[in-house]
Amino acid sequence: MRIGHGFDVHALVPGRALILGGVSVPYERGLAGHSDADVLLHSICDALLGAAALGDIGRHFPDTDARFEGADSRLLLRHCRQLVQGKGFSVGNVDATIVCQRPKLADHIPQMRAHIAADLAVELDAVNIKATTTEQLGYTGRGEGIAAHAVVLIQHV
Ligand SMILES: Nc1ccn([C@@H]2O[C@H](COP(=O)(O)O)[C@@H](O)[C@H]2O)c(=O)n1
Ligand SMILES: C[C@@]1(CO)OP(=O)(O)OP(=O)(O)OC[C@H]1O
Image (cartoon, rainbow, N blue to C red; front, side):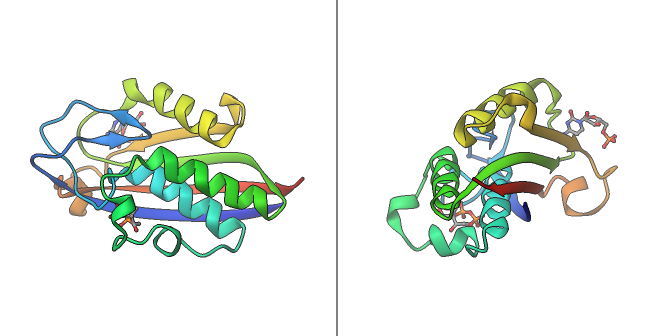
């Protein structure tokens, strides 16, 4: 059994869609990035890569590579799962926290979980997603961006 941790932050800007866990969340701003900037899925990708000692998301999907411009991060997540499987591991469970002052995410979390469970080929019960504000403190509290933390367990098949 091995553990991995991931952390990511993207800035909230006008004129972009807000995509979290593969869900398009209605909001007046969205996350800036080279891909679709799905901060939640990026943190889970990094946790998977970390658990398998495979580096980080920027190593596998460089933001200088036009193939990843506007990319659906669910494709990146599936690719990370395949990399982990290629080293002889399967995914155990995922726990993640989205740090976001606004918008309210609770109604969207079931759909995010379903996407992540499907992309990782695990039961729904193996995926937990949480959201928290920072009580208006710091860059997330001021609405300048959204952060996400994730931990995953993987096990030898
Ligand atoms: N963007 C968010 C942030 C939080 N939630 C939910 O509200 C609960 C209370 O948040 P606090 O930061 O005040 O502790 C939290 O446990 C989430 O269920 C949310 O839906 N969207
Ligand atoms: C996903 C990639 C690649 O499109 O770009 P971004 O969407 O900017 O995301 P980030 O979390 O900065 O890191 C990895 C990148 O290389």
